[in-house]
Amino acid sequence: MVAVNEASTVLSDLMESFGQDVWNYAFFLTKRKDAADDISQDVFLRAFKHWNDFQGRSSVKTWLFTITRNLSLNYLKTPFMTRVSLTGWIASKQTKPSAETEFMDAAAVSQIWKYVMELPPKYREVLILESHYQLPRKEMAELLGISEGTIKSRLHRARARMEKMLKGEDVQ
Image (tube, rainbow, N blue to C red; front, side, top):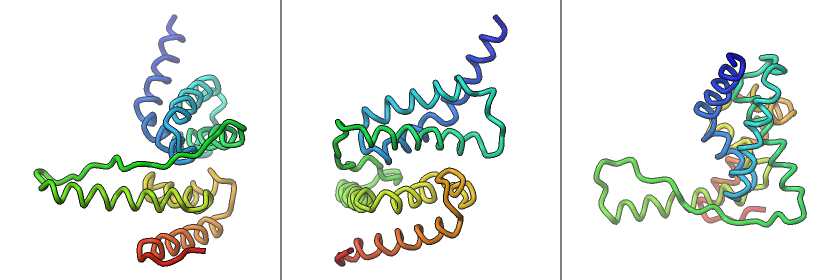
């Protein structure tokens, strides 16, 4: 009975610590809330099942993101997968912004996320891992299975494309 309680605690701790990040990452990759729900559940079930296999060569977060990425990429390969657009869901952090400020902030955030989601997946993914999840480049390289140099290159290109889109320039 003690082993069951310990295992339950491990699963609960993982979900409490990383649940929202795993769900967000799955959503960023799939662009679907329902897929992110399913994938994030599968991630924690797999992590729970293979917890004793975790060797600590990366952080737990990177390990969970690797599982999330693999499941998301598998999902994206399924024939019924359709694309949807991300809508704005980040609120202003001011204490009492005016209605105009709230509208303008929400519109700006929504436009930025729209541009991020229009980036090719390989650029979008590194930009989100760096900006949103603040993963070090070394961990991003491990997670994506590419070199740190490739990470740097993709980040540079992603930022350049974002800058052009924000300026209203045509991006090829």
